[in-house]
Image: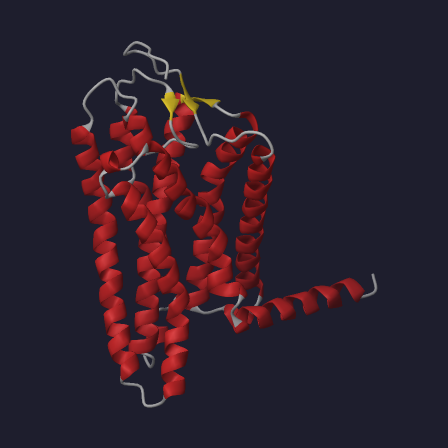
Amino acid sequence: MDHVNHNWTQSFILAGFTTTGTLQPLAFLGTLCIYLLTLAGNILIIVLVQLDSGLFTPMYFFISVLSFLEVWYVSTTVPTLLHTLLHGCSPISSAVCFIQLYVFHSLGMTECYLLGVMALDRYLAICFPLHYHALMSRQVQLRLAGATWVAGFSAALVPATLTATLPFCLKEVAHYFCDLAPLMRLACVDTSWHARAHGAVIGVATGCNFVLILGLYGGILNAVLKLPSAASRAKAFSTCSSHMTMVALFYASAFTVYVGSPGSRSEGTDKLIALVYALVTPFLNPIIYSLRNKEVKEALRRVIDRIRFILREPQ
């Protein structure tokens, strides 16, 4: 790492992953393919929910909001990952670095809150089926979705601002994007207080939301077990299984990086864990949530048939 004076704030260097020989182009092509498939899958869900009336339900509305978020979430970090895989260590201006830090954490916090809203949606659908559509009206859906974005971008201001105001004496970021822990390691001052503040803000925000999700699923489990038939219980569980899988993936990796003790892990470990929630989870979202779902498959077929009919019409 290069040492500089306390006033240095011009640029950082992203170290990325160390790849050599034939592994480098393979890693680049593999990451590029996953990125493009992630964009295609999530955009497809957004289009289907907008075009097919069969998906005009609260559940699919929130899934489309999540897909929209994932498109931006993955696009915040993967381009720099691709650049470091192709060119090795890459310079990045301090302004762009801190913007990336803020946007990435804002989108991450927004996803955290959105997962809570989606759990609430399933809870109302299963526990209050007769009042579900009144409780989850279109206006309520829009307000809840908007609130997740406002809350996410507000909560991320604290850790991003605290990190951006640090004096830096080093410039090589041991990561493929600008994240909290790698940047704090470059500071000229003791950052233990900053780490505790970050952990408190992120931990309280995500922890409370996680407890809410667990409480809602406790209520769902209690209601499902009271259903009279095994078929109805299986159907209720199937509507929640995909959401529970995404919650487990997202929270397990995020808690490990941001709430665990940074000193107990090597620098390279954070990069590998970050791949789970920054690349793998957005990639799996359309697969787990929708593309294997019968309703989505039927909606895709109807949209394709409609497009074919339009194309066959005489001009």
